[in-house]
Each structure stands twice: as structure tokens, then as C-alpha cells.
Amino acid sequence: MASVIKGLSKLCIHTQTTKPWSLQECVTNYSKAGVKAITIWRNVLEGINLNEAKKILDDADMKVVSLCRGGFFPSVDSKRRNEAIDDNLLAIEQAAAIGAPLIVLVCGSDSRQPLETSREQIKEGILKILPAAEAAGVKLAIEPLHPMYAADRSAVNTLQQATDMADEIGSPFVGVALDVYHLWWDNNLEREIKRCGHNGHLFAFHICDWKVPTTDMLLDRGMMGEGCVNIRQIRGWVEDTGFTGFNEVEIFSSTYWEQDQEQLLHKVINAYLHHS
Image 1 (cartoon, rainbow, N blue to C red):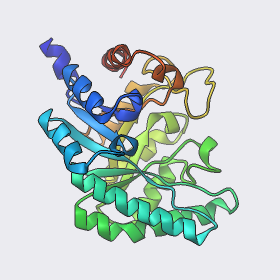
Image 2: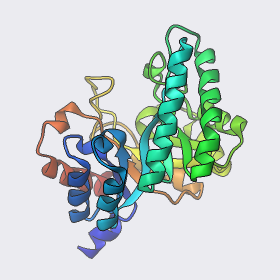
Image 3: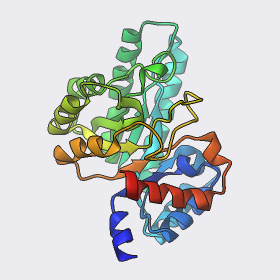
């Protein structure tokens, strides 16, 4: 049992992986299973006083790794861009209140305009919220998404693009979240991980697997070892940069959400121990 607990010391689970559970259920069940780190999706904070959420986490001695998600900056509509800024400022307040040191940015895109315009609006949006993030002590991680999401979910689609943007912004509070689901296919991945890490921009590392065939662009992610991603190799590249953060399991799966969540949690832990 002790060796299993040690093996879980770098495991973080996103609340979205066990989406049917409330924050309290996630914290209670993760902790009981030996998982002591969590990334919180903002939906589980709805209807909860933030002080109450902090108490739930503190009572279980649960480490908050990050808050998901901010972003969605681009739009042809200036009103929507301003609303996105307000929502990201709220996310910063939420992160600070619950002790999350990092917000993951799903940056957004608008198919009604060129990708270059969306990317510029992403950078502008980050710069607008950066003073509030710095004042709150909350870092911002740009998450590049798979190119299949370029039209509507993120105009940042490679690690190179994300690292370039972090370089351009030039703040120690702005870096990158690397998700193997989105980046496993990139033949420049090893080189770009090295560059991102050595530039001090590698803030987070997310894991799951790419099922073959995948049946849904968003909601058919696989358990580690269930697909074609060489997670151990990518994890090795990440750790070779000196990264000492958590391995964050983030699985969106309508199939898994329909299952018994306690059983699913144990499957996640087993897959993590054996395939990552």
C-alpha cells in the first residue's frame, strides 16, 4: 500500500474526469483513494460559497494544482471580448480564493475572422488580465489545443505557437499547459518541450489517451494505455526539462461519465500507475 501511495504522489485528477461528482464528492473520494492533488473546473464552484469550497479542500489537505478554465478571448464582437475579460477576471478571483496557483486558458477562436486575428486578440486579452493575475499571485497557462479545434475553441494549436506567445508577453506569470491529447502528433514536440521548459514556460502537464477510432471530437478521450499516445515518452521529455509538477489526468468522456464514478476513479488510478 505504501508503494502505491508513493506512486500517486505526482498524480492530480481534474474534477471534469469525474464530472457527475460535486466538489465535495471529488475531494472526499480522491482523498480516500490516496490522491492528494486536484484541478478544479469552475462548474463545481457554482452555487458554493468560495470560503466553503476552500474549507472542503483544506479539511482534506487537498493540493489545488490549477483552476480550469479561463480564456475564450477572441470574437468579432467587441462586447463579447469585453465579457470574456470580465469572466477571466472573475476566474482570477476564484483561483485566489480557493488557493489555486494557476489558471488554464482555453484561448478561444472565432471562425468569422482569420486565425491570426484571433491569436492577436488572445494575446491582447492575456495582457489585459495580467495585472490582476500578478496582483493575485495567480499564473496563467496557455493551453494549445489540437488543430481540429482551431475554428472555435482555440487558435493556438501547437506548442511552438503557445511558447512563442508566452515569450512575446514576457511575464513569469504567463506560461503553457501541455496536454498530450492535443500535442502527441507533433513531430516537433520533443524539441518544443525542451524549448518551453528551458524558457521557464512549462507550467502544467495533462495526460489521457487518444482512442482509435475516436468517436467524438470532444467527449471520447481514453484512459491512459487505452489508445495510441506514448505518454511515458512524452512524460520523460517533460521531466528532462526539470519539470517537477503534477501529472494531471483530464479525461472528457460521455461514456465514462455514465459509469459508476468510484469504479472509474480506481480505473484511472490503475491506468496511471501502469501506463504513465
